[in-house]
Image 1 (tube, rainbow, N blue to C red):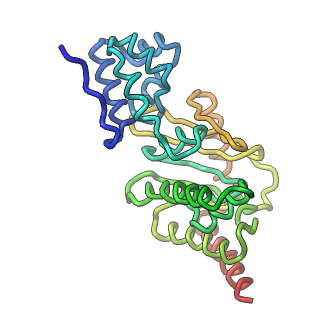
Image 2: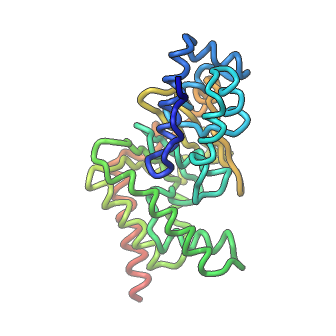
Image 3: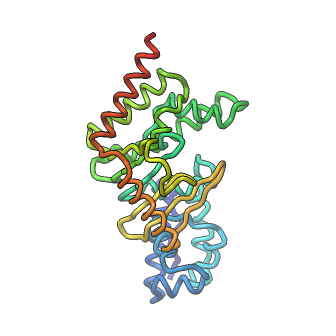
Length: 279
């Protein structure tokens, strides 16, 4: 009986690869936990591969072919699923973000990527790469703005963002850029596309002073948290880690302004930037 055909890279290869993995696992009569044991990973990791929330790495592809008898199918096709315009350390997070049903994010230093305007993103990338050619900055900005297309779907994901007040007051790109960036956020709020709360500076010490939080929930896979550092990051599915980050986010929402008061504050700060630019 012939093996499965290679995947067409133009038709969501990662999602198709996940579907093929589920099909092959079920044909082998294995549960996610049983297959995970053969790869020395958790059953939830297998579930995330099947759902497309995690990228299949070449070493896992080879082990899956051995465990499931798929004659090199996954090793061949994981290359198509690995193509990305994003840095390697961030690619998995972006791909998971695209299929998440809920994203909860705390931003301590900058407006989250999904809420950024092109001008704001350009200012951020130029600060990261002060000597980069303009073409490289253009590509980075285009890739970041393209990510925001996930918000075009009126049903998912639900994006719930907590912005530190310092994020709103850090002048990134100049007053005009900040005014436009904050108005963009308020527009999304008024269109009922996102929930935004502001964590005031007056709160003082809080549950996430050591960095940002990004939690993602999925329809048919365990939740993930993205742990980001300067120039790098990783996805984590450890239940204890996810639970800890979720509790920290919940404490932040309890300390933050209500969505209504947050909207009023963001609009007021945007107006101040616009007035400053006019003067």
